[in-house]
Amino acid sequence: MSDEHKIPDLRTASYEADPGQVHRVLLLYSGGLDTSVMLKWIQDSYGAEVVCLTVNLGQPGEDYGVIEGKALMLGALECHVVDAREEFAREYLTPAIRANAVYGDGYPLFTALGRPLIAKLAVEHARASGCDTIAHGCTGKGNDQVRIEATIATLAPELKVIAPVRSWQMGREEEIAYAREHGVPGKGGTEAAPYSIDDNLWGRSSEGKWIEDLAHAPDDDVFQLVTRPELAPDVPETVTLSFEAGVPVALNGTPMGLVELIEAAAEVAARHGVGIIDHIEDRIVGLKVRDIYEAPAAAIILPAHKELERLVCTIHQNQFKGDLDRQWGYLVYAGLWWEPLREDLDAYMERVNERVSGTIGLKLYKGHARVVTRSSPNAVYDAALASFSESGGLFSQTASPGFIELFSLQSRMAWRLHNEDPTGVE
Ligand code: ARG
Image (cartoon, rainbow, N blue to C red; front, top):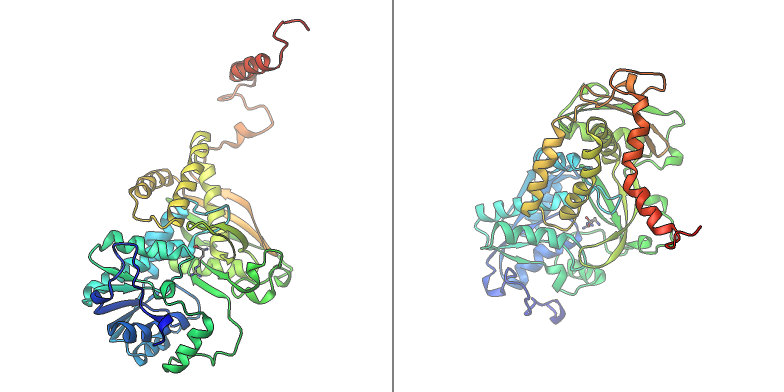
């Protein structure tokens, strides 16, 4: 091992492992270059045993048998593959939908929602396999390290953490060289660095390459999930999403479990070019970055949910909830999933969503999804009252001028104070 790849001797947080404490490591293993090199590197540098954990959150096209085989080939004691899609949908995506969860006006938080679950599973498997330390492949510049380490430090103060990518100071070329030297299979290492991808059931992010050049419009090859709108069908398609208590339960009238429904929603939205987000983002660690997101399911489910919520809530509930939604999204983005305020907010979200049942129709066409129909037994809506024709009954138009006079009273008084000549002379 060359000197620059050594174990860090400077630790700044109490949960970071002292090399002497590292005997058996639970590695969050994706099968990619970083964590494959890491699997070897931990064994070599710490002389430690490694147990791998790979979590299936619905990332499309992943072959878990191959990942497991690779882990064992690289010397892992065991490789646990966990299908956590149901738990992800039920415990993480459900509250996210109820909270209309987006960060920075566009990011539906799929990575941020997945990390606390991945880290929670890492804690469970580390304990069950007698590990003293958890290792992950996050860099020191991202949000994911915050989400994972905050979770581990919260749930398992007895476990230590190592984040080799943050400390080993290998660039991509050196990693490829290390992989070659240590028999880590790769693609040969001559190809250009790929996009940095993270994905699950709820969306996919791409970072790196030209994405870092803000003046560079997206190259076509970045879109692997969503059809580019210019290639989408020339004929629009209308889909309906039905909700019960804020949770989507049917697509086009067919009842489905949430995982299946999200997959089906993603498929139809992606086909119509819906769900592309080119996003400038304020990371929690201070950096401002650009991400390209493809989130087709979120791009139809969230607007449909929000529309239904708006329909069944009063003006006051609607005014209020947006602020709470934003706070919920910020906490989750910032890695504070286990913060009690999130649960407090969830209690409110659940209560409001008791009435969010009904069906929303969206028309999908070349990159756009537009709400076109709404129905709910709980709509605070009366067509007769809203109509331009005379309604009588509950609503009296002759009462309106009196309302306007009182409703605008303070505003009118203040305007006069601020704008009239104080001498009173015109
Ligand atoms: N910017 C997004 C976030 O902070 C996506 C991060 C993707 N993570 C990754 N390791 N590629 O949640």
